[in-house]
Length: 318
Ligand code: FE2
Image (cartoon, rainbow, N blue to C red; front, side):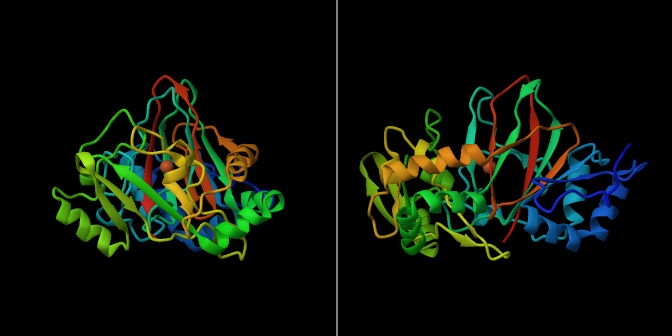
């Protein structure tokens, strides 16, 4: 039997699951359904951190675009973002999610938390599930904050008090052999050094030009902890992903430090990832699923997979 939206689960459900009302068949009905409830759905998103819409008539990228628009969220501007991912757009709002090799797991991260400009919410849509694997895994960063604060109170206090600095050496041209190999030209969408400097100045970055036309770009101090609307604290940062920022130009220990420049305690830093792995749940995709994720409260990652998998995404501005 198909459960209606009234048949809700416990207040702690993660993600909260809505199944389509019985008989709903047209994309326009799904859009109307969401538009009617958008305030309630957004309130539930803040409570639960993630919502899964299953069985709704969202059959293609255009339907997904229309479903997103039902929420009337402000769109995220790529021009202002400093995303590291390679994206290809399907519609104005919808693009293919990270196209990293299927054999690689993409670790837990908050979208663009290592830059001053990041989306508040994310939509995902499963156009085609993988043959095996390929779940999107999710971890609540408020739960992670509590677990980490219990084990490493000094580390958490330092992060909270001083914030974090992210500092990457970028090559002049894309380096596909590196996970952090995006060139400064591509990152800042510029051709010349002067354009990059102008962009960094506006974003309060500091920088240094290095041999080989490489650029060390350092963010302003960014908060490591964010207070959510619920009052709970969330580890909104990029500490886990940064543990893999390693190539010929970068090491994790130089890529992220406390806001006052001191290095991070390696043991506590390693524990962030270990604890998050224990808290994470797998969202196993079915074709047509739509997920809405609070980017400030929840990290996402991608399990490795076999076959072809196509999950589309869309970003919502803060
Ligand atoms: Fe992502």
